[in-house]
Amino acid sequence: MNAFLPADILIPQVDAMEKWAVIACDQFTSDPQYWDRVRENAAGSPSTINLILPEAELGTAREAEHTALINRTMAQYLKDNVFKTLKNAFVYVERTLENGTVRSGLVGMVDLDAYDYSVGSTSAIRATERTVVERIPPRMRVRRDAPIELPHILMLCDDHDKVLIEPIGAKKDALPKLYDFELMEGGNRICGWLVDGAEAEAFNARLTSYSATVGQKYEGLGGVPMVFAVGDGNHSLATAKSCYEERKANNPDADLSNDPARFALVELENIHDEAQVFEPIHRVLTQCDPKKLLESLEKDACADGGFAVKWYTRDASGTVLLDRAKSELAVGVLQGFLDEYLKTHEGEIDYIHDDDALISLAKQENAIGFLLPAMEKSQLFRGVISDGILPRKTFSMGHSREKRYYIEGRKIK
Image 1 (cartoon, one colour):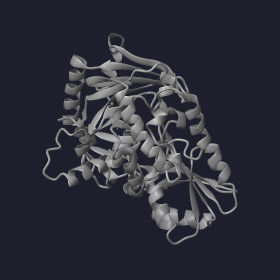
Image 2: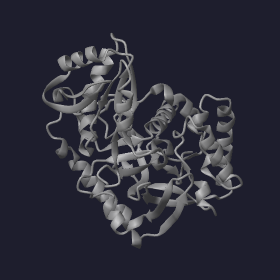
Image 3: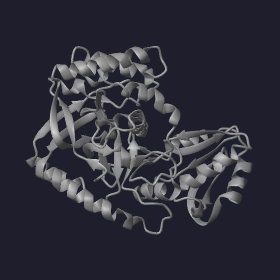
Image 4: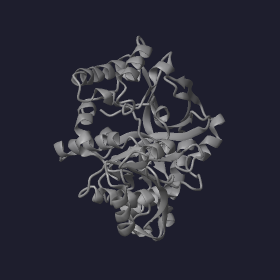
């Protein structure tokens, strides 16, 4: 069985889709006014803001109240026939981004038995960055009694030849269109098409072939090849996995092979989509001795022919060559060194997205900044397979308003 499958997908039947669709709950966590505007915009209409808990509310007095309200509202929406069910289907999605490019994806469900977020996992589906297990229990409180799931998870394939998703896009004009509208709060446009029947079967056949041969592109690496990586929403997928494992533990004699809890809805995207951009996240060290840090870096983590990384201080700049034998990625070498160095030396690390901001911050007294190169798309899977997990803050997939909006759902009870 493939690790990514068609599902019985719930599609809203509402008059105002722009009020229904709400951005991923883990965005704008320090901007409660954003979420206040969303609630105001959606007032009086069916909306996913009534079905999700913004992470800005985790740990607040509103958390327990809204969690209970979410479950009641889900049940009411089901009773009121807010949803139509697309049986055994995928949804092909095209999302227009801020720069005008269009990012393609396919909504379906993953088999949680094929997913393991632990470091060193050898499963078909893996996390790209370390999962903070302490972040899972609050999310389990929301999912545990929910009758519906709504995904903001973006799962990635390393499909150089574009054999999986792109053939569907080439035939989209022959597919039934499900929605086409402008997303709220500057999210730009999104369109969705139904993929079922022969088209779904053709995708499954392509995925079966792809999965059987995917390891060939990673020959020479020390680790076990994988089929998919979780790009965004890993803690939400880890929550689904934890709820499923809890259900198995509580029902040791039950056959859960077709239980809804075994699966989770996600959107699959190809890292080789032209609209998919991986932006680097730079490092700046403050309250440190830049000269001593640089000397230690050159002694412990550099080698001829290494990754070229620019550094900046208040009155100087230069380049270090980070030892390729230590990681598949420049950020892996640097972060590994910094983690060890800061155990015994003074300094505070921060993660910066913008090049100019990094250079400006490095001009502070007792500071040094490292301008990391953008990660090549092909390095993502190779890095996870070889190193077991990517360093935290390795890359950013697009801007905040380009994250996934909740539209489709699935029954999980």
